Length: 138
Picture 1: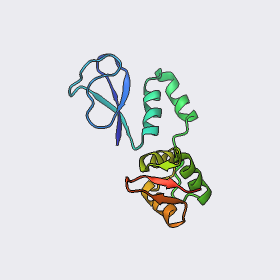
Picture 2: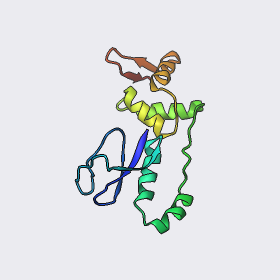
Picture 3: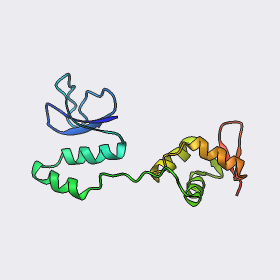
Picture 4: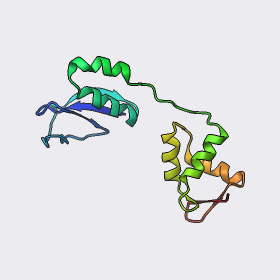
């Protein structure tokens, strides 16, 4: 869960996850007077909400209607999309779970990278290495 907060000193908004009390705009340390403007579930939505919160009030409704608030989430990705993600996660033929997870999330695929990597091993596409990385075999 992410929160959009407004600085009591400079009135600018920023996003937090957890307990950030120092304004990145003016540097003022805020106490309990930090105002939560909204909460969102993802970093992508947080970025939109912070941008809208920092706009002049008369532009907010128009921008909110122009910006897509729905993220495309793919729970049942196609094999071709998964293969694309695996190929793009490979750096010199080596895949880390962290990099694969980032590429999957970037494409809206909400499947665990370890599950995808293990499926790649079972299909003969990847080879699990002792250091926790995977070798791309194609």
